[in-house]
Amino acid sequence: MTAKLKHRARNLWQGLLTLTGDDAYQRYLRHWRQEHADSGERPMSRREFYLAEQQRKWNKPNRCC
Image 1: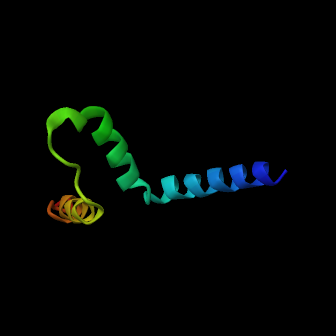
Image 2: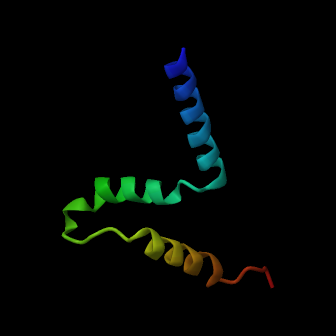
């Protein structure tokens, strides 16, 4: 019973992370390993990823006019 409860709690937590976008770095790493791991480069650190996302979000026009 305890293992089942832990599993449900873990699933709930993962769902919350997905809903809020807080799992973006984990998704990035998963994608990087699948698509770019053999490139010889390293993936961005969590800080580099955060800064790149901030640049992506705020360096474009945010209004229609």
